[in-house]
Image (cartoon, rainbow, N blue to C red):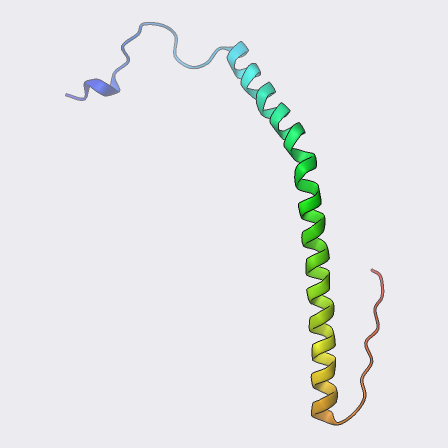
Length: 79
């Protein structure tokens, strides 16, 4: 009935150790080459996020000052 699901060859099933190790080696090489290319994008995303956080904080302080008819200050510190 489902002849396409049955194996045609009589050889062993699965991958050999050599095939598995070569596939892992190729993946490791790709990660080693692509890894340094991804790091600057992550750093740029962190800077962008920090800039938006500063802008939101300043906007909130301005809104608070206008609502309460007073002055506000914003201080920054390092964790």
